Image (cartoon, rainbow, N blue to C red; front, side, top):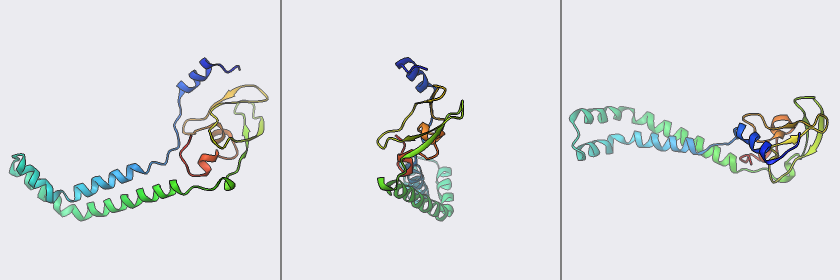
Length: 162
């Protein structure tokens, strides 16, 4: 199969997801939990300031008994977010990364040992036996993560995909 701009753009249009370690989500969740936990203090003042009804004040006072739970949940999600952030930033050195990977063609099961690039992911790979161009499976960033014996260097280093 010949690779040209049309075939590459068509393959890209099929799309695939990246393996991304998202540490922002737990941090945002913990901030929301802390805001909710302290709502017994600021929510009544906000409701009074906006001319709210007494039923809204009762709702705000009802949240007060759950403030301890919200504080604990906020602390847990904050610690989880910090853990994911530190895990993302604890990068393995390039010496610890394995660069040789054996790619197995999904069509003909031909295996070929290749040296993976260290500075980019490889989205397409042409089988040397049947000449079919393969692309990553959904959820994988490159052909090495999908069809290789070893994940690509960025994944080995706990970094986001290319």
